[in-house]
Length: 83
Image (cartoon, rainbow, N blue to C red; front, top):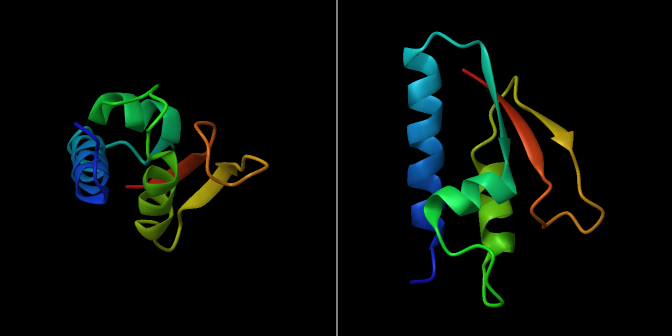
């Protein structure tokens, strides 16, 4: 089953909530790892662009891009989320 934006959003929210509960000050999320947790990667029909878009949309003040891939939409995008 191909993951949707909703799937990525829900998984990312769960990771951030777990980090808050653990009293972490931040968590670094790599798009490839998030995609693997949701399922469906690697796959020739994957939706990495959707995953990266969701990660960027969920950024808030205090969050930062740690690693920006050349194309902007691949498995190497890393965002540090302040929790």
